[in-house]
Image (cartoon, rainbow, N blue to C red; front, side):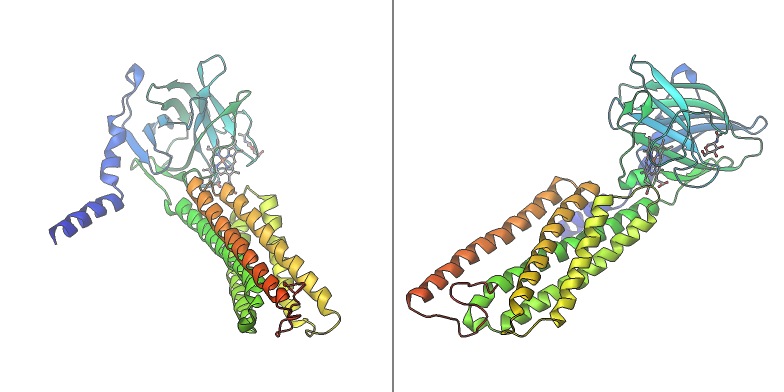
Length: 391
Ligand code: HEM
Ligand SMILES: *[C@@H]1O[C@H](CO)[C@@H](O)[C@H](O)[C@H]1NC(C)=O
């Protein structure tokens, strides 16, 4: 009992977010040149903090933004967005190391999800400077005239891994990078964010991935394996057919759900279209739908067109499986899912291929044995001895 309680307590510490510890961490930050700020906020994403003083008589915000870029050649950005809690419209200050090794802070009027360019911004800025600490953090300092009587701002922040020709390159699109927006209350001195934004979009992407991987990656190939190998067993006729159809129908149902979540993700995304992933996804859906309808057009077993139907049904089926595998790998790359998921999916593929190889060998053994014993055809009539797979 006691060990159980102990481990439960321990577990709850692991699972609970620890805002109380985080809340105090920005306060321990110290700055060069005796810079002091009345307020500091630990921002809820990208391990960043904002330190500021707002002088309402002049409308000037003095600030320090602290964040660690993903690499020493990276950048950190803090912005005010007068138009909304999104990247586009951000009046950004971006700090990075120049090719001569000196730190610089530049202003960017962010108006595209494709690239950004240095430009004046809507606010008067002064005292821009930055330091790259030995702790891997960039400390960016600025004074920004936000106007007298300002009370609340949309703030946007970001970090990126590289800079090309003095222009920051695109940041990652992980959930933390997509959620780093919020309100800054100058009067109360607090930052609030819709911290569920990034997490919920991450969940949707994961659900999309799981549905499609289970459907196109596991159920549909399994259904094909059943059709190809189980039907060789005389005793399994017509059971193989029902197994095949129920596997493919449930795979199709889950796949359509996965496809719909994908279309929805595409709609929600303001700046990115993964063209190839999207097009392959649409092709898979179209081919699979065709496959379902073709079921109803299936000619009778001994109809002369049955051969053509079989060729068509098999080629469309294999195309769906191959395209499915390709798109799952593309999706894993987009999700930046990490090697363990990729490895897991490769293991699934190896398992399915291994199963197919074993069954293939086994089937040929049976076929050869039947041929030796002089049996000409299967009693089920689906396949002949010479063509065990019923093309
Ligand atoms: C350097 C060039 C940049 C490129 C190419 C870039 C590209 C993108 C893209 C493609 C998205 C995804 C939008 C979607 O969900 O469809 C995004 C989101 C985001 N970016 Fe950037 N970005 C850049 C710079 C910045 C900077 C400087 C900031 C901070 C001031 C920033 C902050 C954000 C934030 C907060 C989001 C999530 C909210 C949103 O979608 O608007 N980005 N970015
Ligand atoms: C920022 O860019 C937008 C879109 O290009 C433009 O409408 C706006 O006037 C620019 N703002 C500033 C301060 O240059």
